[in-house]
Image (cartoon, rainbow, N blue to C red):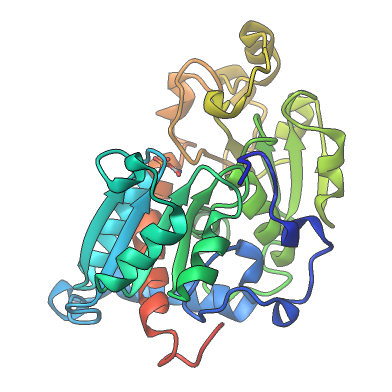
Length: 341
Ligand code: CP
């Protein structure tokens, strides 16, 4: 697969979820767009319930169940939080990374997945540099597959933990979501939209809850076509104008590993799009700053902003564990919970 391509299913107009062959397994989470509003509400409620549960009770939920983490790209937050989440529920986890495994010898994704299944894995958490890899792995193994980031395509659990952070700040931690839950809320996503799977998953999630999404960045990192991504999504190239309208600012890293020769003038970029203290002053005091991480201090935002009172970046990280507990539980108990939500 070419890492720069979008899977065929995503290039077509979005089919109704039930008309799609994916996901095969009711426990899978491949795309933020595959979740119904009931499904999102269920995950949010379970995240809170599991977070508050006695750890000695919680770690019996998936006692001795086997979860494999299959990581072809580096990760700190996603990998650690998925592992902690699965272990908190009592599951046994094993990590296979592209370095130090037979992937280095040329073993394919399909064969690696079938091998993990034969070894007893009951669910696979996959990060891969190719867009669509999670769909391929699911179709070959039919196991529950949790997409932990596929190329430039999607990162659905990041969007869910971003949502949990937004709801905690702006909607008193609401857990039941409707098409109006985020009505009146403007979320600006700023920076390297083109290469961002986080942006794409949030664009599939937030407008369905009533949020207005502004995309902000230079033409090289934000093509005009992005405005056609769906209802509720528009482009605002003027960063100050986006800040003035927003209750949530989601800053993105420039994904140097995916630029494929694209040359950017970083001083020009910072002059136009770096979130600085003075720019933060144009935001409402109740507005929050998000970033999926890793942050590059001094590039997309200053250290003062990252560490400042409006930054919810470490809350996002913390919410990752709760959301991923709910998603791992759903992966392994989806049949008992009544199938795909
Ligand atoms: N947000 C995120 O995916 O971070 P990692 O690459 O560290 O997992």
